[in-house]
Image 1: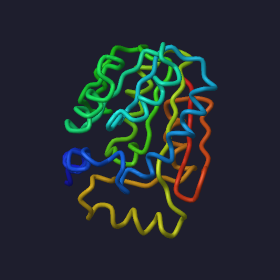
Image 2: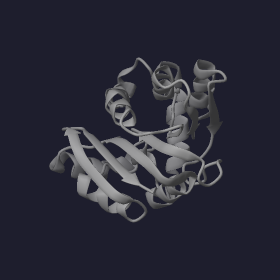
Image 3: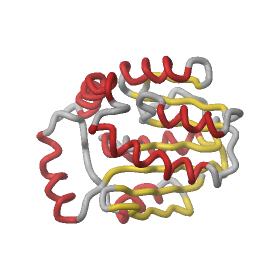
Image 4: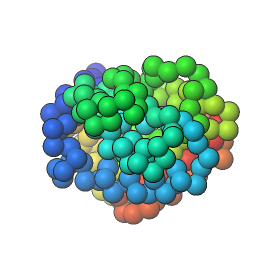
Length: 202
């Protein structure tokens, strides 16, 4: 069985030095303004970024809402090192696994996951952990990559042979079903040919 986590960790360790400017980080960067707009509509005092990468989204969040208590977790040691360097003491940055989040239950009012979810080999476990660390009434925001039906189906056949740790590209219907197993009020919509936005409430 392929170790998707190891592949993801190795891939993002390699990409970390140039992720914020290179083409392989471009899709994540297109999601930031959309997620920031959504966060701005949610009352929040604390936020967790699951798959925080270099901390670029957290930096933008803190620039807009400096009083928010922020944390980030990422599987890649190189990514978390860059996030710590960027954010210094403004956010708690930990290397860790979305399936075993290193935070107590009910700790955050918002959790966000940007362009990371398609790397998770056990998405249901990750969603349960995200649900656990949110307080009652907390909001989970998910932005991720997708593709039109024929291309998505082809890519999902080919992803197991790749070396980047990608597991699956989801349709809006598939993401809605996954999130609805844990969250309520779930909605998911395509925001472009290659991007999905989903959210749910605890």
